[in-house]
Length: 317
Image (cartoon, rainbow, N blue to C red):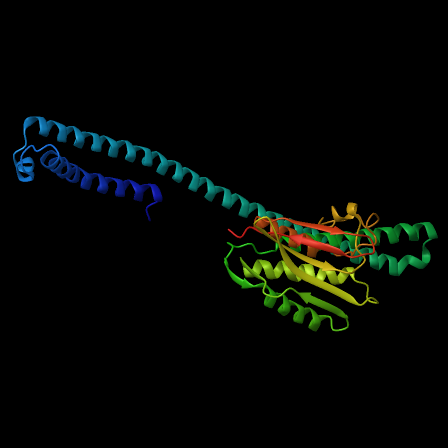
């Protein structure tokens, strides 16, 4: 089992202490011979007086006492490290169990919801012509509610399946990464007429997988805000706020109000309240979760019918 930091420090302290005792004896002999003219260095080393022996003994005792106190302090730290490590392991296992249970429950709910939706659709197709107008309205309402439940479960499952490993830091050419994402979006949606403006010479020290996931979702979300009939424009750039890099994705889409900007990243929105916003919420919700996972912030600013901008930062340390 590898030694922890405190155990290594205790061993180093013990070795340095053992080396310090002869060094202190030699230093005292040199000082007595050179500064105080109390014989030669050889006499101080091999024929010291009782007074000099007492002083050097006290020095040695002081050094040993300091070593003992230091090792005792580091031993306490080592014990706390072990307790903390075990607590982290227990917490990790508990979190893993909870995530697995949550995932199982969500999948069971999704399957049950799909069965319910299928049954209601069959009921509607078989008996709709025999039902009065009021009953048809209720059946249609059940169908819509079931569809909405399926969408919410699919969104929740998509968020829980996001992979969050240990961040891998490396230098990234963000302008090149953004252009690769633009090519991918153009290939998947060739009918969209959207001009992308990518700020050149953009670099970042971060996890490339994380930034690709965020930028892809923000570009795709910006496309959702731009009507099919409009000549779209999406801009990606960066500016400095104090010493921090702030990245942004700006579009000329339908925009949103200040009140809506606070609900834009909600995993589940009220479709009646925000009916003019894109119905898909997974893109911004997953981008927010990824950014927060990496110690950053994300927010939105926009004007109704005049486009919107998503800003984000991340912890590059």
